[in-house]
Image (cartoon, rainbow, N blue to C red):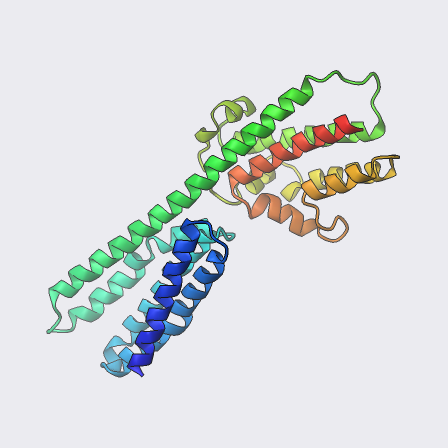
Length: 311
């Protein structure tokens, strides 16, 4: 039995190592290998290993320690997987996982081992060093992933803003069509929402363009949604969603603009304009981190300006 457990543990470690290697080199299949490796490690190997160790020890004294050990591994490794895979709520899980070993596992470990007269102090030193390494690795993982994503966001947002500035310099038509008026209305709402979000960060639109790295919580989720609610608007951008639907509807009714309607439908991210209202709003403003909400708004505004110039 122990030999099979060792083989399973070795296989999980090899899969995770291979997934990390693929991830670093941006090769396909990295996410699948990491997910399979972590799931196998946490849901198969660790329970079997802890159960086997529990049966060979003193159950009445070590049961709590075994349970807390597994929960700690589940929280820490789960948070790592979420962060590596960029899944929703990864930032929150990392914040929970960083102190969890010290707040939950360490007190239980010290309480249980203090009753053992034969306990070796070197084991305690080893556990403390291991916890410190895990915490440092988790923190560095969080910083590295966030840093890369934020830097890319700033670059993309800068490109959108520069393109929008060029479009604004084009000569305006003598009269505006109804669809162009709707586009201007949606752009106005985008500007209003962006200002509300930036205000919650103590910034202005001009500061966002010049010094985007001054955001206080660039990688935090739900900041945009909270800012919109605090501003007194309909939660999660329902107003903007309605105006985007109006633009798409007007484009569909405008001769020669059917392709533009489909393009607007696509870049706005409205996967189903009739039945997916809550999912669209939540995915755009609640589940995404702050930088990606801002780049979405910048890109949406620029694309709407391109549609307007194409009419």
